[in-house]
Image (cartoon, rainbow, N blue to C red; front, side, top):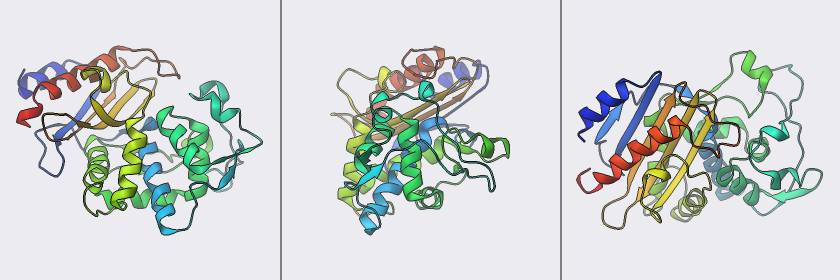
Length: 285
């Protein structure tokens, strides 16, 4: 299948499908509406992860220090009451079992990525601050992505404060991590980038991008979903070709998966199909 044929196929999908595909450090092989903004869902958690590790490298936070686990957070909307997360809407019971106790930031960051825990995400944001996350997007070269609030901050959402991503910006962020693991880059030291990639490699939600790859293929990735939205963003490391960034963002009625994200829906299958096409072309990107 040529990229023009894939574009024609995606043109028939209701809603908006954006994509970015290209080797790390090179011009993209194929893009589709790559600068179109989408609601970020949980893909913004990758930028939060980077902000945390940058703070650790700067010495302002200790990844292994015990952090109180609570479910109450300041809203990004000035004057709004504090907000909390809904336990039934989260994806990781392990974090909730620690409410009232404490947990290391390193562990919370891992749960934020590998199980996409909303509670862990807000706890990490509470430590690093939203300006630090904005700085990560800036350093990665992102042009349109915004992390304006925490998860389930409904007062801020109603006031128009939101979280947005584009396929190009997510590719820039994850591509910078992959490149930074081998040479000093804008986001973190090589050791820091490697540590973050290791967390992204451990992703347990594998029903979209990873589903389009052969079993055992290494992919450092983060996905995100709410009803009407499904995204997959990652860097694939084939054994027989250079690594490549692949991002597919969908805002479509095909994304009907529930809050757990465990069940495949048509949007998952669409993203897996794009991932399979990229894998088939990996030597020619």
